[in-house]
Length: 109
Image (cartoon, rainbow, N blue to C red; front, side, top):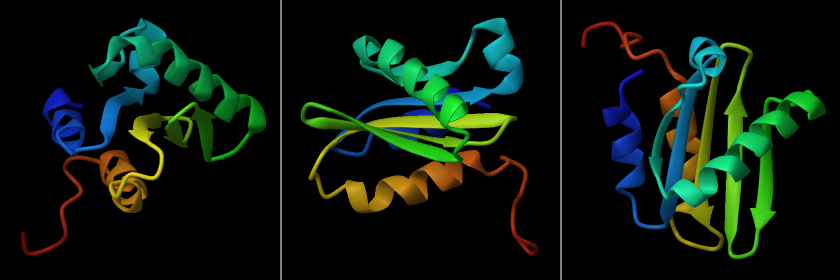
């Protein structure tokens, strides 16, 4: 998973940080991360919470920000964004796009 995909998500105004982590990266302790470093431990705890809750996605509110973590046992994506920002409407769609396999293009493209 290239960081260029998550860097594109970070370019959106209102998004503070993005995590893109496969199961292999989790074992190696080397997740793809862009954005404010101070959010990384919070996002990693939200990843653990998603696992403990046995849910596909969790949203954690932290002050004026929200952390959305979504995925499955093979791939997890986390996004930190400003609550109430217009980008919120697009965050779920962006997370779904990050979870798609990079080579899974529609036929004819």
